[in-house]
Image (spheres, one colour):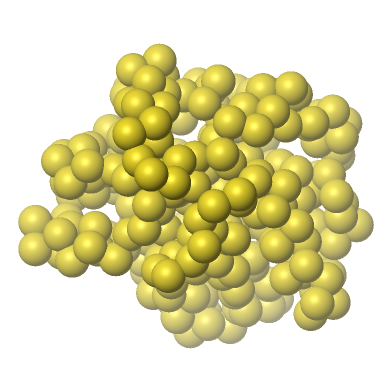
Length: 241
């Protein structure tokens, strides 16, 4: 049965990050779309972007194409976005898939759920910038986010990343609606993910979902680049009952 995926990227990324995965899903007969969130991607205006802007953009993308039965996937920061999208248009979503993603609680912001050291780093980088943005340092990207890729590949992808508008990480989120949703949830855990420390994503974030389907795969935090074929298969598995 053909499925429709809407893929929501994480910090510093854009919809382009899913290109290889979209091709792999298409080869298996499925449709996938990957919007770029406001304030993200090369050349974007990063001033004044809020978390609500990100949510509204994904909702508009889904509604514009009248997509029903959507499998909504969030990677990393994208997890916080799909939580609120699902609460906004629950009738359009058949399953939520969190790919080593953040799961934020009601009245929390993204920074609230990050490890203290990483949260402080993002705040310090944004404060030192001229436009309240923060960019992942090369060393952290190479050693902790995409350590399973050759350095030349890691460098080429890092050079495509864009500074993150930090306000999206500071907005307190109303997630009371998400907590009451009956939409099935899955969590994809990448076994070699070193980005935010051992156990952060699973069971740390995954345990916040209540009842969920757990699917594991090998790879670090950036499996859409390093293992797109395997990730496509895992998304299909995670989206099944």
